[in-house]
Image 1: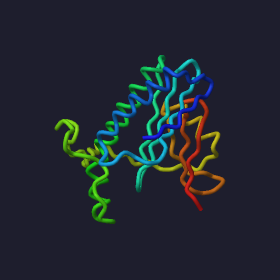
Image 2: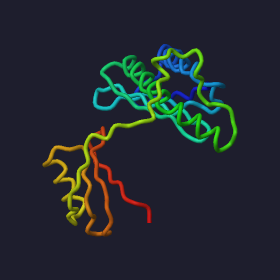
Image 3: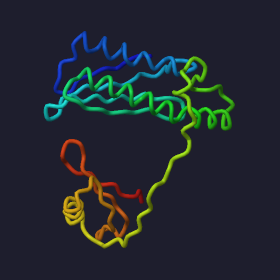
Image 4: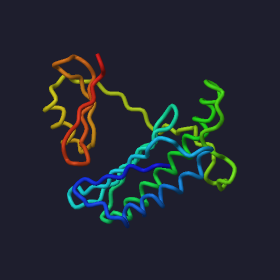
Length: 182
């Protein structure tokens, strides 16, 4: 794997760079052939928290993870663990889809991986369904409602566009809006 490591509000030292490359290189054992595209790694500091974002573009899909902790090395370890969980979740589904659609060989290896890491996790357990009436409101009111109920997101009918939107609280403390493409 080729790494593109950059820093935001932090100087990327040679020790950090080597640690990132060593930890992320562990992921190569999960692939039939190592990814040929650049693995994008962004190390940053936001509000005294050490943030790591990793994006690994693969054929037909992308692995992406973000973690933050008080220590940069801990953040790197956490993001690698998260990527391993994603690989475990998606390998069966991805391998099946690629075989069916294009006849290519598997993207992920199964041999050589401990059995507890290649359990079939295609089934998701839905534990609750919630129905509610969407009240038309503007974005500011939706943010207020979200904060009042203490959630990190809020679904509402946008009174300006008359479409269903979602407002959410970002990690940086600001807000985001998800709206359908027109």
